[in-house]
Length: 369
Picture (tube, rainbow, N blue to C red):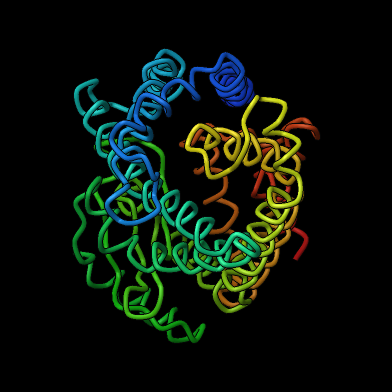
């Protein structure tokens, strides 16, 4: 099983790296070949004053749709292997190809709507506030991300999963008592039909304010003991108690400010290299994506390091609160087998990709307490 997990992880991370390189090359060629400029020029017939007002949004709607659809088609072989064939090869899902495509359509539609809102806000703010657009846009993106987090459990998750209040009343009472003990206010506990998409196990503490709730995957609820589920949720509640969610909002906000300020200060040099004159030009939109890809590559190790630090703290507090050391260890063993997790990855893989400490490290920490 360990060898199988290693094999799965090696393929998964190799594909992730290949995907980043492939996406970067596609965007680069799209810009350098002049295709972006030609497409934007063709679409300009719908509006000579692109996004100067609400009536001038048609070029953006069409440009974003055409580019998104083109990228999806070009990326489909890699996508279908990575998220469908590979998962079936390692017996991590029983989802049909038709169901997979249905989820792809849903995800694409949601992504398009969110992208449209964010990109439209970018051009509108850039048009009306050219001197400090980077600051105004950063504030908008930060607020928008918080709104999305609030809407996630009541709007987005139900599009992909059916979920209902937890049917096991004994488990529900136990979870609510744990939440009260850890001073966490939640709406209720819910279960989702995770097994229709994947055989992996998971649990989540999602939402903000009156949408905050616990969601248990049926793959976890049906295969783990009450003690094991309690220690998993104690870990999730620990993130809230230790204010990790707030700290992540701060970190992500600083990252948003940093990348938009970087674009503000340096975009003229990059645009000139691609034969473009201004960020206001719709053809320049892929340049923003290049910034995000490169910025993400540079900052990913730091973000992973911060996340691993938070996860260790949450593990410690969960064990301190529940005292369920053996349940924690058995849970880690089960999750490693069920999710085919790499228990002891190469340090470079851990440095770049692991936002949680590897399973063996988490077990070692628990045994040391």
